[in-house]
Length: 228
Image 1 (cartoon, rainbow, N blue to C red):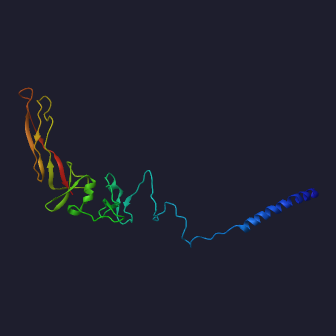
Image 2 (cartoon, helix red, strand yellow):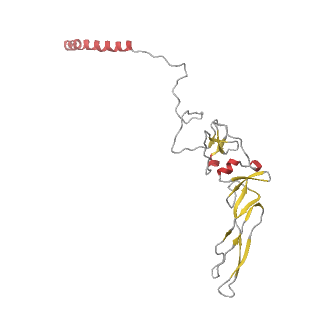
Image 3 (cartoon, rainbow, N blue to C red):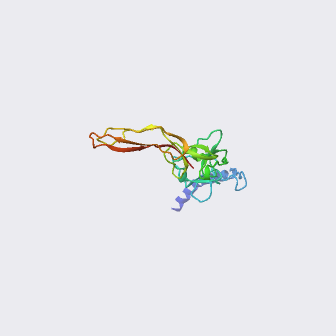
């Protein structure tokens, strides 16, 4: 047995020496490269993670859907609650401007991280940009700026400014009940003014018999309202 092992060792010894020699040569000829910059420079960028530490990304970040508790301008100095943005029509920026939040929290177009000066409406409750984002138009009456909406009431969170309104010129459909001859009401309209004037109409709906006459009435409707 010992002679057999000896003969096998003699056969594989040269091959083992060759393999060891090649490995040693490979290690000796390997080129060592030092760091390209002093630590911690040139480190691999940290991946996006769930820590509470602020992370800035140089390139764009894309996603099918994103959620946030607040939306802020680029330097994080002006933020708006997400609920205030929901359902709001954001302005379309051009000429190199980007979407930023102004001092009131409204989204406006500005340069870089600098938002334009906030132009407040009366009582500083809402801004001109917020008026525009809700499809309103800024009007000035008696030196006071407020927002005019083509609606019958102010948006949620807004209040009517004094009595400013417009009442439409229109003709109603049939306002009489069944079993009477139909009639309608016509209104000439009331122009934009600070007035509580309301056009009303009172009429009789003639019935099919002498005792079926019914008295009814109509009231003009708002078509524009001033809000702040």
